[in-house]
Image (tube, rainbow, N blue to C red; front, side, top):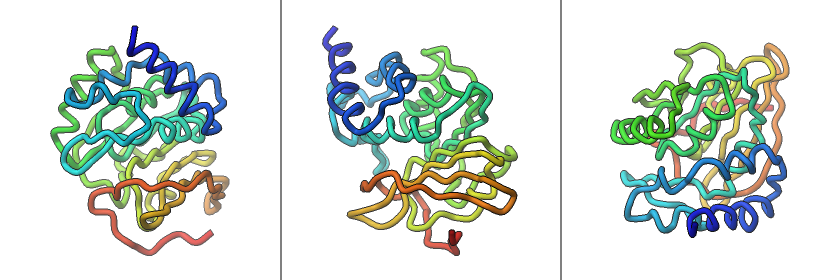
Length: 217
């Protein structure tokens, strides 16, 4: 009961006040127990307004950022999603409950193994987990309706933009610490994309992320 109350408070005191007003997103976050995806030593922090350590120098996003990401991507039951950075598997679960299929890739094999177990416990099977370096793109499954990049990038590689279906959405955090920009990219034509600035934040860099030739809007 304490964890259920903590989940409710997280939604009402952290996520909703951060302009996450999509009731579907709020309901989804309320349904999936975040504590089941948190490393055991930090289970008591599952609903705290903090970035929870996952090991290997990686962290879970703050809950409010997860909420904004889900709201921005506006997923539909027919969507195919690419997630860069599986991490704990919690966001993977949220994406999978909202979409048709999720391809999630992480450079750390241990994260894939843990996520497989956690997702199986919750009966989430519409996910393909892979190990690899996707810091510069992951086009092997064709075009995606949505892409969620869970680590920051100094610049957004063009390969990600080219991997979007027309009408597809991409969430990324771009820039350098201490102030980075969360952005939503939409593909509006064969060679045309729109860009929306969502908020400022600070997120650990995606492993092997490099400054590359970036797309200019």
